[in-house]
Amino acid sequence: MHVLICGGAGYIGSHMVKLLAEQGYTVTIFDNLSTGHREAVKWGTLVQGDLLDIVALDALFKSNQFDAVMHFSAKSLVGESVEKPALYYLNNVIGSYNLLEQMRLHDVDKFVFSSTAATFGNPQTATIDEGHPQVPINPYGRTKLAVEYILGDYAQAYGLRSVSLRYFNAAGADPSGMIGESHDPETHLIPNVLKAVLGAGSNLRIFGDDYDTADGTCIRDYIHVNDLCEAHLLALKYMDKQDGAQAYNLGNGKGFSVLEVLNAAMSVVGKKIPYEIVERRPGDPATLVANSQLVTEQLNWKPVFTQIDEIISTAWNWHNNSTF
Ligand code: UDP
Image (cartoon, rainbow, N blue to C red; front, side, top):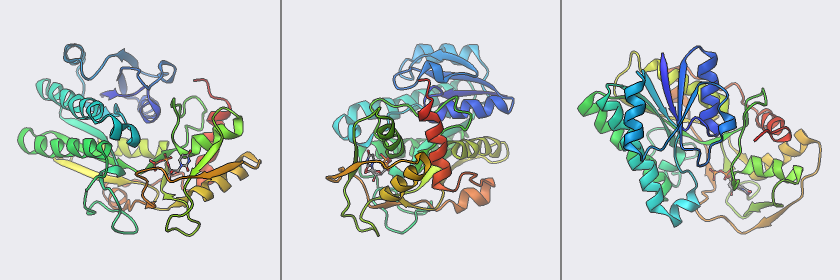
């Protein structure tokens, strides 16, 4: 089976490439390397190109017979999406549309889409299940929700099979230490904490300690990148027997505050990590925790990395020896 992985040189995409290659799939990676890394592509065949380049896409689909497509290529920073919505609509919506049109033209009918908890907006319940209203509060979330709508319409009209996976906070790295998270600039909590230990980033700042949570810092649901990828593999297999457009929330179902993450990181690295409390970051809801019961029941998915210190240990193993 031949799978096209768009964005396979990025953080989550490269872990997906590794898993599929290990499972015996043929993998082609299409990536413009804007935020991904050539060094992250250690398996499969890399084709450098952009989803906005229809000629390149057409050539890619003409020269390969893909059985399925996984789509990880997107702009994904909330703050940037507020400042540059045009960039987000172009990359995330038009880019996805171009890809789906190529799939339609070339009779490829299985699609796994990286969606996000940001499609829900401010949570109205303690944990978020698939029935929670989707009212995104930033352009990033709106671009991802727009693609979910497209997938519903394409299923109805063209029989496209798809699974959208709405990630909560992807974290950690493959335990091999061969690939991991590498963003520039880095905005995510766990890499910023670990970079502060290594002196490779700026000093650690915690964005607000006056939220309505037990210790005043924001609570998030951290899910290991390999557990995320396992869900994609199950989704791919599920589409063999299931048509239509499905969507699942993907998290550990357990929330950790920023200070809890920091304390866990201190015990993993065996050092005190200095930090300062600064102003809230715009757009951060106090709590975001998934209810992943549906994906557990329907796809038989079960996370392996359930403890926050295990997740941080794999990230530490990467950051301590990272090669890109
Ligand atoms: N955060 C922080 N300092 C940082 C990075 C993040 O205090 O250097 C906080 C952020 O405000 C949020 C939580 O950590 O409450 C998780 O943020 P991250 O950017 O990792 O993921 P998000 O939930 O925004 O997708």
